[in-house]
Image 1: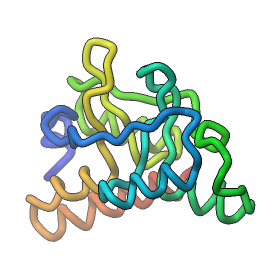
Image 2: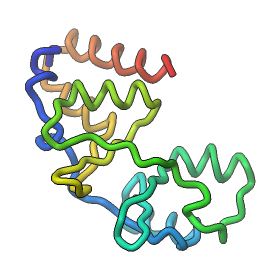
Image 3: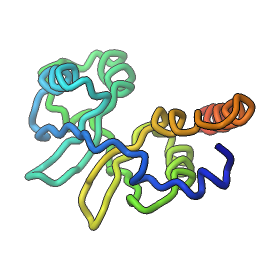
Image 4: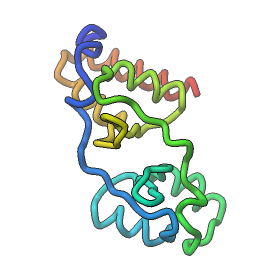
Length: 150
């Protein structure tokens, strides 16, 4: 898949609609257990059904385990905020640019002001693999450069 195809593929066509939400007062451990059961790599933290942050598997390593944060701590204490989102009708190239500039790998998707899905770097790599091996190498190199540019 070349840049032109990435510019013609939209977030809504690639995103996952499977989103796990947890209340801001839920403990880190309860949140992790829900992630495990749901086989999902991040949780959206909500306050009265309004998304206010996100916690990813990477956050569990960097913010929780590495810092020795107790597992009974409320999830809102370790969430990434403000919540960075992308509109469902943006291209995956634009989503990639947001991920690169913000140094993130999971991007909630909004439609009409509501979170309707999530797009990840893995999703982008998966759809990129429809091209030739050389095109795939180029895309992977671009993604790796974006991640290492942080």
